Image (cartoon, rainbow, N blue to C red):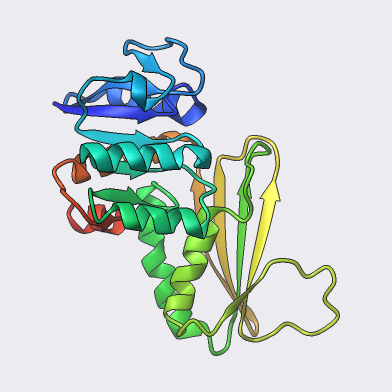
Length: 252
C-alpha cells in the first residue's frame, strides 16, 4: 500500500484526489497538509510539514505556488518523491524543481491529463509538416477563478511545437495594438476565462483554403487527479531524477 501525503488536501483538487484514492486498493492518503487544517476526510490534516511526524512514500501537491519551497525542502530532506501538480509556476519555480530532483525524484507536468499529453505528439507532427504553409494559433479556455494566463498547458503545447521548429517561432500574446500583418514565425496565444470551464485547449493550423484543428476538452477535474495518482505510483520507488507524463505513458 503506497502512502500518500497530500498537500492542498482541502482545496478543490485535493478533494478530487481524495475521492479518486478512496476508490483504489493500491494506495491511501495517510495525511494532508493545508493552510486551513480543517478535518474534512478520514485522515489527519496539518497546517505545515513541521507538524507531521508520520512516514509517507510519496507527496502529491495540488496547492499554491507559494507552497513550493516548503514542499521541496521537506521532500529533499526526507528523500521522498514528489508529484508537483500545482499550476501557475514560473520558470524560476521549475528551475527549483529541477535542482531538487538531483536529491530526490520529482514529477512535474503542466497538465496531469493523459489525454493532453498524448496530443503533444500529434501537434509536434503537425507542426513539423505544416509550419511552412500554415499559421499556428493556440486557444485555451478555463473557469473564471483561474489566476494565471495563458495556462501552463498552453505554454507546454507551444513549447513542444517550438521544439520541432528549431525554437525560431515566438509567442504573440496580444494583438489589439498591432497595426501590421501577422509575422510568419509566431504562435498566437489566446486565453478565455469564464464560468466553470474545466479546461479547453485548441491548436489551430490555418492554411490557404483549409484549417486543421487539434483539441482537448476536460469535462471534469477528475482526469487531473487520476493522472496525478498514476504519477505518484510511478515515481514512488525512484530515488532521483525529473519525470513527466511522457515517462508514465511510455511505461504503461
